Amino acid sequence: MQDISVINVIVPIFMVIGIGYLAVRTELMPKSVIPGMGRFVLYFCLPALIFTTLTTTPILTAMTPYYLIAYGAGSLLAYLIGFVFSKGISKATTSEAGLNGLGMSLSNSAFVGYPVLLQVFGTLPAAAFTMTLLVENLLIMPLALMVLELSRALHEGGSARQVFNNFVRRLVTQPILIAIVLGSLYSITGLGLPDVISSGLGFLANASAGVALFVIGGSLVGISIKGDVWKISWVTVGKLCLHPLLVALMIWLLPPFDRQLQIIAILIASMPMLSIYPVIAGNYLDPSRYAATLVVATLVSFFSISVVLALLF
Image (cartoon, rainbow, N blue to C red; front, top):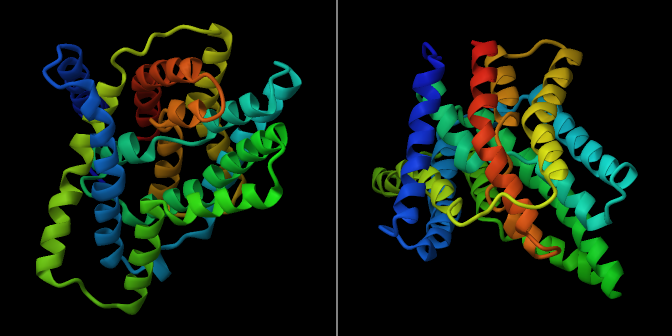
């Protein structure tokens, strides 16, 4: 672990986000290319990074059950609190409650978490990052999508079989999940990657952090902060404050385990919600409020991440 300066960690990250914003805002880069750049990261760069790091990680010994329980249970509680609060207090629809819960429980570990971990630790903590992605891709995201799809199917009169088929199709075609499975299987075999393949994938992996942050900045252009200020505010607070606090509570309740893993779990939980949050919302409801929530949470996360780093280091 490196000596940590909060400014040295946070400022470079938000500087690249700012460059992405200015590039699109000044039309030096057309906003139409940003979705394609995002897909480039999600479909190629991050899967390459995950696969190559897993092939050099002893995956069977790297998995830590207490990390999976702490991050998984904390994230699940954040989702349930967001969902129940929305239904019970705000009288929201099931779709709206599901989206609020998703916004409070699923971190942007790919586009923000990875660059932050790289800045903090110097190299990617492969095992922790992998366990985080497993929780997000096998627990939180499927749960959230299932609730949203069930709500829509019930509203439209769709069958349970259609809902299940859509859920399975989305799950098995996620590039990050495929990379986790293949990388884990390759790690178990103990085989090393040929240098030529490792070098080629390395080019893609090394592009992950910079392109991801640039995409975040560019995607913020044109999004207006409007809508229900109360709902935007409490979902933002839920994501940046409640989520890391719940993960910290789970860590406190569990028997002691590796200190670095504890820090990583809390740190990733303090990230804003995933950048495709309004895209997911747009499949079910008007995405404008969810886009505004993403903007607010991303900007405020400068302070939440700084506070977590200051407290943990």
